[in-house]
Image 1 (cartoon, one colour):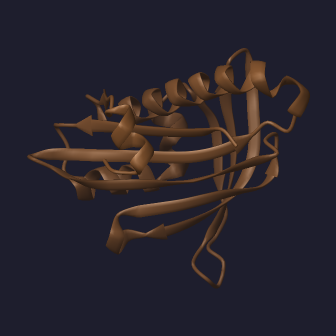
Image 2 (cartoon, rainbow, N blue to C red):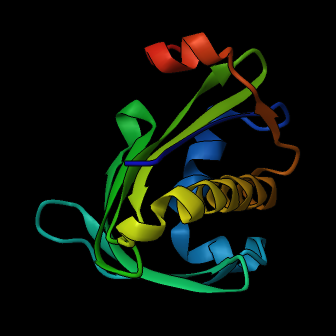
Length: 159
């Protein structure tokens, strides 16, 4: 299954502020043109929420509903699509201190559900997803610079 890992340094924002902004999905359309709409439903008894997304993706809109689990004590968010345009879409957000700024990590797995075209579509979708997440973070956090990890470290799961 294709994956996207993105590490972004936001030097002008504190980790608690970055986590608060990233967690506030309903505000995404105000802060970045990449996101057309997000509707956040009231929390479930377990504390998770359902959010309905419409995001500009290449020349159209991708739409899905995901279950989001927020862990403010760990500055983390887990998400998993429950319905929508992807066959599979799940991942995590993580926020941590980096000097005076913030390091944000986005990890996701996705499957477009078209196995016969996967070799062609997956790299295009991966690049578009990476670009969209970077644009979203720039809209949310202001200055945001992607950190390109050493490929060997990235494969080992280390930052």
